[in-house]
Picture (cartoon, rainbow, N blue to C red):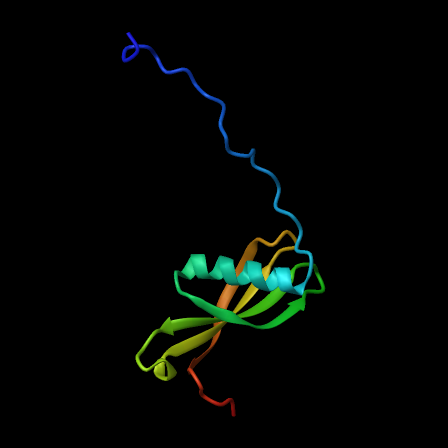
Length: 107
């Protein structure tokens, strides 16, 4: 009977785990930092305001994040996080460096 037959294991359709590819350029570093930080802190990212390669390898990226969404949008609170990526694009560290109201002018 079909219901009582033991299920045969099927080959997985997933790709085997591979090493993460190296970050190719500043745009790639910004995208990976934004995506990784957003997942980690579970907040929407707005974009990146700075990207720089590190002397020891890897990247430092400043990612802007919506911390408190408000209506009207101009009163929302945002923060800038400094994210460090390894050469393969994995997130090594992050820290909040600045918090501000949307539309506020730097002094």
